[in-house]
Image 1 (cartoon, rainbow, N blue to C red):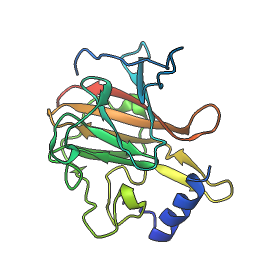
Image 2: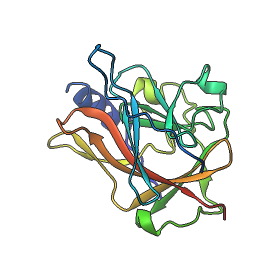
Image 3: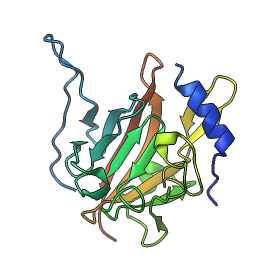
Image 4: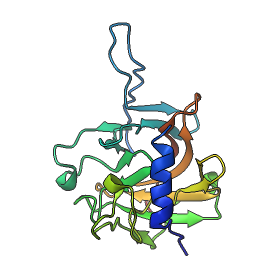
Length: 209
């Protein structure tokens, strides 16, 4: 059974955190000497058929979108009605392009108690779409109704130091608008300097069942 953060916890998180497959193409731009900003999405091949993507989701208002098939940032004209993106990130919120988040039909299966390397095929059932339709819900307001986003409970919250860490032994399988499947493991919410809103995830394509 999925556990859901309460509105009070989401409000606490808001206060604490804001104070502080195909042939992929990779965006590895870290900025340049002319002062160009670093890329919001950077993907690197790990050499074992998996990839690691870092998403700069530090902006408090603007979602950053990612496309698995391109292994790159997506820039949808209308995110609510554009199949070009698979996941969107805004601080600790992660949405997928299905349900109330988009018309792409993306869906997510949540696998608990399994290791990333042990997921070799996508499940045939158990997929859910985002459902954040109630007033006051969704990432923009940083509050939640159940079930909210399929990725809502990717983290464990430490009330002592107000940090987030990915839930252990949890793998997400994303079915994209194109009908492809990708397994996803959340790695971190912080960069090396401890800056929150820097999401790192490991992922790989899965063959159709």
